[in-house]
Image 1 (cartoon, helix red, strand yellow):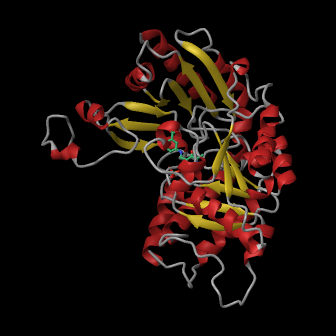
Image 2 (spheres, rainbow, N blue to C red; image 1 turned 90 degrees about the vertical axis):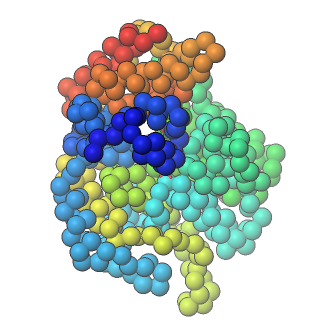
Image 3 (spheres, rainbow, N blue to C red; image 1 turned 135 degrees about the vertical axis):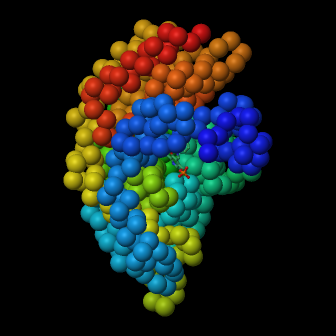
Length: 440
Ligand code: PXG
């Protein structure tokens, strides 16, 4: 039955939608009805290019029959199995396969159901690791301004987006590095030149709090939600060195950058910088069944494996950790990613992507453009006194012209499925150009 605004108000009212202007949306709802490959179809029958890979997650494109078949088979064979004191083959197979794909040394995997859970899991592992090694005084966490690490209490505490933090209490012992979004880096192609020295902020905070009190530093290797901020050249290397100087664990939040988004299985590999813990979700299952995975260095894992062998080593986990259906979806997604070379495909498209997005430099309203891998963002000047209004107008106009883009405030973000063709990249930024020329 088609939805429209005139129907019984309960039809739309009951769903309190996430990160959405609910009243505005329900006045003029945008309903997606189906999806295949690079495209959605709206309820009105309009074909719309998915320029956001769902929400940075549908890396192999929509409606992959191999995944659907694997999920169906799994549902009929073992639909659910607890992972507490019991196991099932899919969980072990997936963990081993992920460990082989991961940066060297990060070969222990803890399953969650989302990025937020992966982040909170990683932070708890960091605290418990130090305690297990007799360094229980390491209770401080360092995040970064403009970081997004999900919506759990740990994640919003280390996150650096004020709207996600200001309404809620946060963990007490958290400080933040400065962000790397410097004005002199505007319109950088790929990694910006300026700002590697901002990694030395770790030393400043260590001086302030005592380096021996820091448990972990967490950053996105390329910040995603905040509007695609690639790290300045050399920044991540310096961050790694600073963490080593102070004995703090380095956590990369690869919820967006994992599974091919930046041209390697993980950003850690693209940058040649290895964290101690890596959080993932989204693309691990092509976004079709909720799943997350936290990758942990073997030394960190092994620090837990002490004491009597009958004792539970880590008091943490979820009803759906390693859900058999999610594991089946993830294994099928990995088959596609590896079979079609999707984990490195972004690298071969990067030059075309960069040229296309930077081709909009002189379009109306544009104040900055950034890109890396198959991630990109365009900042628009806000309308006088109405922050976010122009970004929203662009989202609506793009949808009308046939592209679903992500708008956060006045920043448009782009992250198509990794199957995107060069022609589709051209088409997408053609639409975006028309949109920018058409809105006030
Ligand atoms: N870490 C990072 C780096 C993320 O991007 C999360 C953690 C949390 O994942 P879950 O699965 O709990 O949502 C994310 C999520 C956007 C947008 O508009 C991005 C995310 C979520 C919602 C919106 O860019 N990323």
